[in-house]
Image 1 (cartoon, protein in one colour):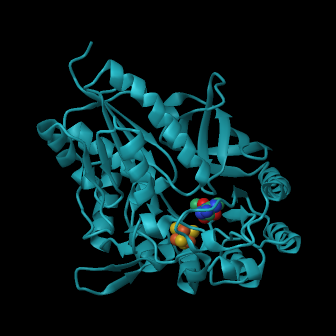
Image 2 (cartoon, helix red, strand yellow):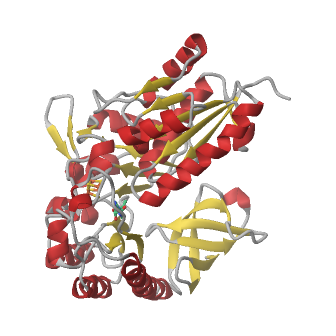
Image 3 (tube, protein in one colour):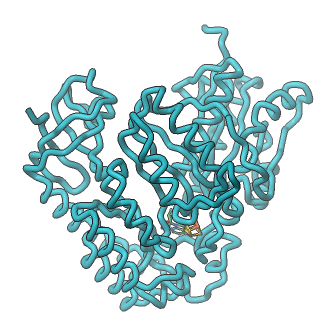
Length: 445
Ligand code: 5AD
Ligand code: SF4
């Protein structure tokens, strides 16, 4: 057995959490730990939790239950919990009373304190709980252990000010704070020097990014994109998530001007009924959303558009729901993350009385998925015969010998025959088949 101590991080939820886990992995690597693939064999396990939906809670408590056995066999085994669930007092209370074998609890605002908590655990030999209510100054310069050598997430802002009535995120991630543009540029340049070709800029609502530059002038999101577009060696820029209410004409113009911005936008619509959108506190109508789609397509005709949609929000009638289906048909999404509304403790919609019955939610969900899949398949079928630039991610996940997979600029997954040595490069692939969730192709001569 190796003497080097090991860690395993299990990450739930969104890209923010994935990025935070890379920082935790970076800190653990600096502390001399090595990554362990098998969770139950590691010396430290960190569970980075998500609170967006209810069923994730139950899965999480199930996972915690399984860890008890390992703790019994190996008392020195360390269990640490972080992420959005830990920002909720009722969750911490439940962990403290029902899961006494948990050693460390911290939140979304103080991941940089993790090494300190681990050494305090070692010296004090008692459970460490440190969760901050809100984010302080942004901590720069933390280490990171990236999952991919050729692409990377880059946080540009933290938190959310929007308080959509169904959403827990403003309560778990605090108020909006934007990083300084110089810090972002410095990070992206360092990534490019390290071989990264594609960055995905992360924020709950990147369109309201507002960073202060060294001359103390405000820099908007489109301005940041122009700066990044000028970085030599960087090939692709992605970003998420864009809130429709803050999508400015300047951002549309940036799509026209900046060739490195990928041919994809993730633009969550959530619902197609104006009444429901109002009660979700989204600040746009379906007509406004359709106009935005038109304006983006006017400068980027083939752009792929993906979205998030919730069915069964309190008070959603059959008519409201049909308006969602109607909007989906009008837009023709390339893909959509579809969610069944689930009540989140502490959000305004928790108090809404007219909750939709479970069976109605499920029936609508199935109908929605059918409509979304239809447009996804049609959009993918229309790609056949086109030659696309594909950033190769490695062997195909479908397990077929000699098959690679990668992403087009439009974020579509393509499987094609090729040699693994192409991983991390951009190759030209001719699309030969369009399926609902992916494409097939062959390397173009
Ligand atoms: N129930 C269902 N879906 C939700 N989302 C956020 N909160 C909820 C909830 N309470 C979805 C939204 C958001 C995505 C990340 O998760 O569609 O855009
Ligand atoms: Fe949640 Fe709305 Fe903020 Fe997105 S914009 S994180 S859905 S509150």
